[in-house]
Image (cartoon, rainbow, N blue to C red; front, side, top):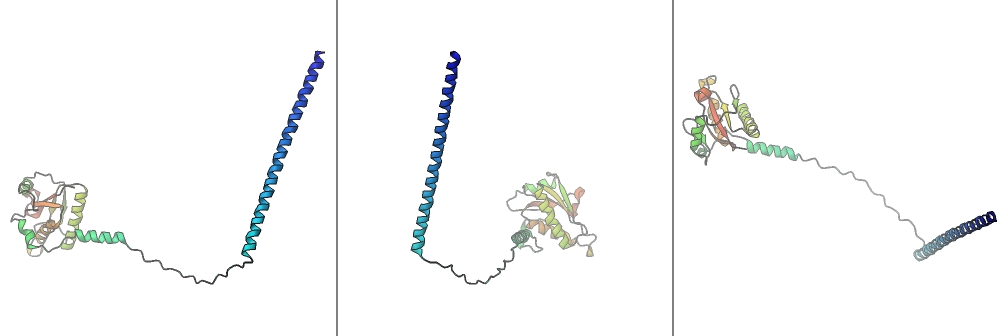
Amino acid sequence: MQRDIRRFQDLAALRDGLERAALEREALDLARREREREAREAAAQAEREANVFRDAVGAVEPLKVAARAQHSRDRPAPIAHQHRRDEAAALAESISDELESDVVLDADEDASWRRKGIAPDVIRKLRRAHWIVQSELDLHGARVGEAREMLGDFLRDSIKHRLRCVRVIHGKGHGSIGKQPVLKGKVRGWLMQKDEVLAFCQARECDGGGGALIVLLRPS
Protein backbone atom coordinates (compact mmCIF):
# COMPACT_ATOMS: atom_id res chain seq x y z
CA MET A 1 0.00 0.00 0.00
CA GLN A 2 2.77 2.39 0.96
CA ARG A 3 4.61 1.55 -2.25
CA ASP A 4 1.56 2.63 -4.26
CA ILE A 5 1.37 5.87 -2.33
CA ARG A 6 5.03 6.71 -3.05
CA ARG A 7 4.55 5.88 -6.70
CA PHE A 8 1.56 8.15 -6.79
CA GLN A 9 3.55 10.95 -5.16
CA ASP A 10 6.36 10.54 -7.65
CA LEU A 11 3.94 10.74 -10.54
CA ALA A 12 2.39 13.88 -9.08
CA ALA A 13 5.82 15.47 -8.68
CA LEU A 14 6.72 14.57 -12.25
CA ARG A 15 3.50 16.07 -13.48
CA ASP A 16 4.12 19.28 -11.57
CA GLY A 17 7.61 19.48 -12.98
CA LEU A 18 6.38 19.03 -16.50
CA GLU A 19 3.78 21.68 -15.99
CA ARG A 20 6.33 24.16 -14.65
CA ALA A 21 8.68 23.46 -17.57
CA ALA A 22 5.82 23.96 -20.01
CA LEU A 23 4.91 27.25 -18.36
CA GLU A 24 8.53 28.44 -18.50
CA ARG A 25 8.82 27.56 -22.19
CA GLU A 26 5.57 29.34 -22.88
CA ALA A 27 6.79 32.44 -21.03
CA LEU A 28 10.12 32.44 -22.90
CA ASP A 29 8.34 32.01 -26.23
CA LEU A 30 5.97 34.85 -25.36
CA ALA A 31 8.90 37.14 -24.48
CA ARG A 32 10.70 36.25 -27.70
CA ARG A 33 7.62 37.03 -29.80
CA GLU A 34 7.24 40.33 -27.96
CA ARG A 35 10.84 41.34 -28.74
CA GLU A 36 10.41 40.43 -32.38
CA ARG A 37 7.22 42.47 -32.55
CA GLU A 38 8.93 45.50 -31.03
CA ALA A 39 11.84 45.16 -33.46
CA ARG A 40 9.46 45.00 -36.43
CA GLU A 41 7.60 48.06 -35.21
CA ALA A 42 10.87 49.99 -34.71
CA ALA A 43 12.07 49.08 -38.21
CA ALA A 44 8.72 50.11 -39.70
CA GLN A 45 8.82 53.42 -37.83
CA ALA A 46 12.36 54.09 -39.07
CA GLU A 47 11.32 53.34 -42.62
CA ARG A 48 8.33 55.70 -42.33
CA GLU A 49 10.56 58.48 -41.03
CA ALA A 50 13.06 57.89 -43.83
CA ASN A 51 10.27 58.09 -46.39
CA VAL A 52 9.06 61.36 -44.88
CA PHE A 53 12.60 62.80 -45.12
CA ARG A 54 13.07 61.63 -48.72
CA ASP A 55 9.68 63.07 -49.73
CA ALA A 56 10.60 66.41 -48.12
CA VAL A 57 14.06 66.62 -49.70
CA GLY A 58 13.15 65.34 -53.12
CA ALA A 59 15.59 64.14 -55.74
CA VAL A 60 19.25 64.94 -54.98
CA GLU A 61 22.46 64.79 -56.99
CA PRO A 62 26.03 64.57 -55.68
CA LEU A 63 27.98 67.82 -55.79
CA LYS A 64 30.67 68.15 -58.40
CA VAL A 65 34.08 68.69 -56.81
CA ALA A 66 36.20 71.19 -58.70
CA ALA A 67 39.73 70.12 -59.53
CA ARG A 68 42.27 71.54 -57.09
CA ALA A 69 45.96 72.07 -57.68
CA GLN A 70 48.24 70.50 -55.12
CA HIS A 71 50.89 72.95 -53.96
CA SER A 72 53.92 71.64 -52.15
CA ARG A 73 54.82 73.87 -49.23
CA ASP A 74 58.50 74.49 -48.71
CA ARG A 75 59.46 74.12 -45.09
CA PRO A 76 61.38 77.04 -43.61
CA ALA A 77 65.03 76.48 -42.97
CA PRO A 78 65.73 75.40 -39.38
CA ILE A 79 67.03 78.10 -37.07
CA ALA A 80 70.11 77.06 -35.12
CA HIS A 81 69.01 78.58 -31.82
CA GLN A 82 71.59 76.67 -29.78
CA HIS A 83 74.37 77.75 -32.15
CA ARG A 84 73.31 81.36 -31.73
CA ARG A 85 73.23 81.01 -27.96
CA ASP A 86 76.70 79.46 -27.99
CA GLU A 87 78.03 82.31 -30.13
CA ALA A 88 76.47 84.89 -27.81
CA ALA A 89 77.96 83.17 -24.77
CA ALA A 90 81.37 83.03 -26.40
CA LEU A 91 81.13 86.72 -27.28
CA ALA A 92 80.17 87.59 -23.71
CA GLU A 93 83.09 85.58 -22.36
CA SER A 94 85.62 86.88 -24.87
CA ILE A 95 88.62 88.81 -23.63
CA SER A 96 90.29 91.62 -25.48
CA ASP A 97 93.86 92.85 -25.74
CA GLU A 98 92.62 96.39 -25.20
CA LEU A 99 91.85 97.75 -21.72
CA GLU A 100 90.18 100.97 -20.65
CA SER A 101 92.48 103.23 -18.61
CA ASP A 102 90.29 103.17 -15.47
CA VAL A 103 90.39 99.36 -15.35
CA VAL A 104 94.17 99.30 -14.82
CA LEU A 105 94.13 101.73 -11.92
CA ASP A 106 93.89 98.95 -9.33
CA ALA A 107 97.06 97.25 -10.58
CA ASP A 108 100.32 98.03 -8.80
CA GLU A 109 103.94 97.76 -9.82
CA ASP A 110 104.27 94.32 -8.24
CA ALA A 111 101.81 92.82 -10.73
CA SER A 112 99.02 92.57 -8.15
CA TRP A 113 95.41 93.55 -8.78
CA ARG A 114 92.12 93.30 -6.96
CA ARG A 115 88.64 93.94 -8.19
CA LYS A 116 86.81 96.95 -6.80
CA GLY A 117 85.09 96.00 -3.57
CA ILE A 118 87.69 93.38 -2.62
CA ALA A 119 89.49 94.08 0.65
CA PRO A 120 93.19 95.07 0.43
CA ASP A 121 94.24 92.22 2.73
CA VAL A 122 93.27 89.74 0.01
CA ILE A 123 96.45 90.60 -1.89
CA ARG A 124 98.49 90.14 1.29
CA LYS A 125 96.91 86.72 1.84
CA LEU A 126 97.64 85.73 -1.76
CA ARG A 127 101.31 86.67 -1.37
CA ARG A 128 101.54 84.66 1.86
CA ALA A 129 99.95 81.56 0.24
CA HIS A 130 96.84 81.77 2.43
CA TRP A 131 94.97 79.82 -0.27
CA ILE A 132 96.41 76.57 -1.59
CA VAL A 133 97.12 76.56 -5.33
CA GLN A 134 94.74 73.91 -6.68
CA SER A 135 95.68 73.94 -10.37
CA GLU A 136 97.96 75.72 -12.82
CA LEU A 137 98.16 76.71 -16.49
CA ASP A 138 101.53 76.86 -18.26
CA LEU A 139 101.51 79.18 -21.28
CA HIS A 140 105.16 78.66 -22.25
CA GLY A 141 105.55 78.48 -26.04
CA ALA A 142 101.96 79.59 -26.77
CA ARG A 143 101.24 82.39 -29.20
CA VAL A 144 99.09 85.31 -28.07
CA GLY A 145 95.88 83.99 -29.66
CA GLU A 146 96.47 80.49 -28.37
CA ALA A 147 97.30 81.75 -24.89
CA ARG A 148 94.09 83.81 -24.74
CA GLU A 149 91.95 80.79 -25.62
CA MET A 150 93.86 78.53 -23.24
CA LEU A 151 93.37 80.99 -20.39
CA GLY A 152 89.63 81.31 -21.04
CA ASP A 153 89.20 77.54 -21.12
CA PHE A 154 91.30 77.13 -17.98
CA LEU A 155 89.26 79.65 -15.99
CA ARG A 156 85.93 78.15 -17.07
CA ASP A 157 87.12 74.67 -16.15
CA SER A 158 88.43 75.90 -12.78
CA ILE A 159 85.11 77.52 -11.92
CA LYS A 160 83.28 74.38 -13.03
CA HIS A 161 85.34 72.33 -10.58
CA ARG A 162 84.88 74.91 -7.78
CA LEU A 163 88.55 75.89 -7.55
CA ARG A 164 89.41 79.04 -5.60
CA CYS A 165 93.15 79.56 -6.16
CA VAL A 166 95.16 78.79 -9.32
CA ARG A 167 98.53 79.65 -10.84
CA VAL A 168 99.01 81.02 -14.37
CA ILE A 169 102.56 80.72 -15.71
CA HIS A 170 103.15 83.26 -18.47
CA GLY A 171 106.95 83.08 -18.46
CA LYS A 172 109.62 85.75 -18.11
CA GLY A 173 110.12 86.28 -21.83
CA HIS A 174 113.63 84.85 -22.03
CA GLY A 175 112.71 82.94 -25.17
CA SER A 176 110.89 85.84 -26.87
CA ILE A 177 112.25 88.15 -29.52
CA GLY A 178 114.10 90.96 -27.78
CA LYS A 179 113.82 89.05 -24.51
CA GLN A 180 110.56 90.90 -23.77
CA PRO A 181 107.81 89.12 -21.74
CA VAL A 182 105.04 89.43 -24.33
CA LEU A 183 102.48 87.37 -22.44
CA LYS A 184 103.08 88.93 -19.03
CA GLY A 185 101.13 92.12 -19.71
CA LYS A 186 98.60 90.33 -21.89
CA VAL A 187 97.73 87.80 -19.20
CA ARG A 188 97.28 90.52 -16.59
CA GLY A 189 94.92 92.43 -18.88
CA TRP A 190 92.94 89.30 -19.73
CA LEU A 191 92.53 88.35 -16.08
CA MET A 192 91.22 91.82 -15.23
CA GLN A 193 88.42 91.36 -17.77
CA LYS A 194 87.14 88.05 -16.38
CA ASP A 195 84.31 88.38 -13.87
CA GLU A 196 85.33 85.17 -12.15
CA VAL A 197 88.72 86.66 -11.20
CA LEU A 198 88.69 88.55 -7.89
CA ALA A 199 92.40 89.29 -7.53
CA PHE A 200 95.88 88.19 -8.53
CA CYS A 201 99.46 88.85 -7.54
CA GLN A 202 102.94 87.90 -8.66
CA ALA A 203 103.95 84.46 -7.47
CA ARG A 204 106.63 83.90 -4.84
CA GLU A 205 110.05 82.95 -6.14
CA CYS A 206 109.45 79.33 -5.18
CA ASP A 207 106.23 79.38 -7.23
CA GLY A 208 107.62 81.03 -10.39
CA GLY A 209 108.38 84.60 -9.29
CA GLY A 210 108.00 87.18 -12.05
CA GLY A 211 107.00 84.49 -14.55
CA ALA A 212 103.72 83.51 -12.88
CA LEU A 213 100.61 84.89 -11.21
CA ILE A 214 98.58 83.55 -8.31
CA VAL A 215 94.90 84.07 -9.10
CA LEU A 216 91.96 84.11 -6.68
CA LEU A 217 88.65 83.04 -8.26
CA ARG A 218 85.13 83.91 -7.28
CA PRO A 219 83.45 81.13 -5.28
CA SER A 220 80.94 79.24 -7.44
